Length: 171
Image 1 (cartoon, rainbow, N blue to C red):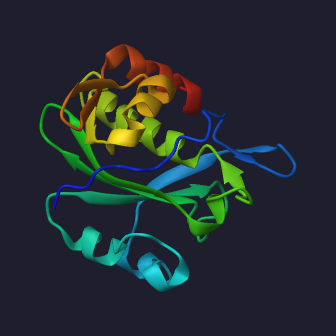
Image 2 (image 1 turned 180 degrees about the vertical axis):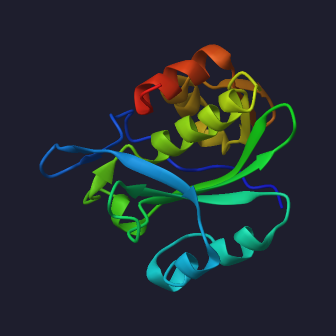
């Protein structure tokens, strides 16, 4: 199934930033074990069926958490290795990180930067592609430096990837 990403990049932050205090929190990203997906469901406010997504053999689902707080999932991403770049199927912030009363900003940007870092570390020069909803193409160009290459397809090229990696990761 081909999804079109519709997550809004609410700011490129240093890790993730608390909307109340303004404090930044270091993050970690791990492949999520199936047991951690128990409370992540549509009835708990998530948009996608992450259990089904994690069972697909051609992709890996990663969770973003705050360092030393691995049980609170801030956001999720479903990513495939296409042997010359990484492809992002889905990106979603936790329900408490959405809307005008969100707890943290920077979650989606952090997950995109992670995909770029995976790509860079694998020797793919940071190349990441994804499908975007039409209404967000310009938004992704502006916020992520992604380039629209036709239809709904977008690519983050090496220069933009490096910018994102440097923003979120101490390399």
